Image (cartoon, rainbow, N blue to C red; front, side, top):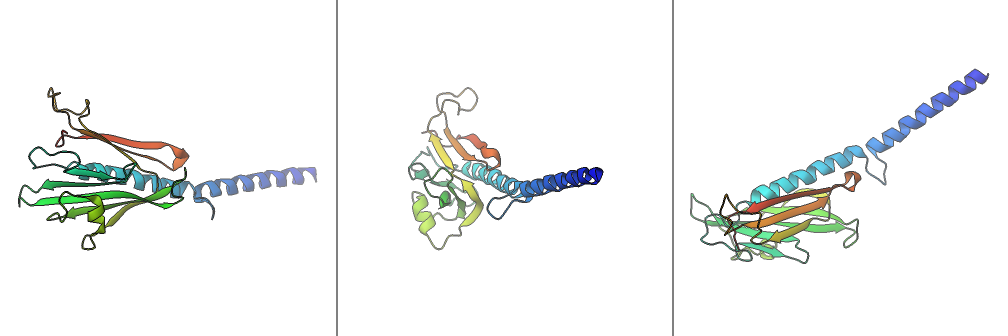
Length: 200
């Protein structure tokens, strides 16, 4: 009898452990599990890489491109960017835009939102490429690249000392930092890159 009781307690312990692990992986109705969080983290990382790739076009093909003319930011803190370049094949000025838009718990520490982009407007309907005007333009296609993104912090540093090519330290480029908090453990995800086309 005692052996059966001990055996049942062992089985109950294993079932409890299994249920706890299943809740961690699959989540509950009130909290996402590891599977959903991992998928979300991958989506956030991909969105940041996509923005880095697209932003490298800012100022390309324009004589002496500048910040606030060829790359425009709006919001305090910065929540959206609009940028333009010249297509070398058609010689047409094209532009794009991105924005972070809060959707849940706006202004709170657990705020989340979406990252949206207008990948291409050719020719650019806004001169200069104001992100506010571009996102208000109903003729342009807005794509959502990430959802449930913890607050995205965008920092622009003009003439950053670390942003110069080779030994040409006299004309450093623009440093862009995109940072957000990954959901898994609240770890930060940040990328820093230079836009060498824009020097001031």
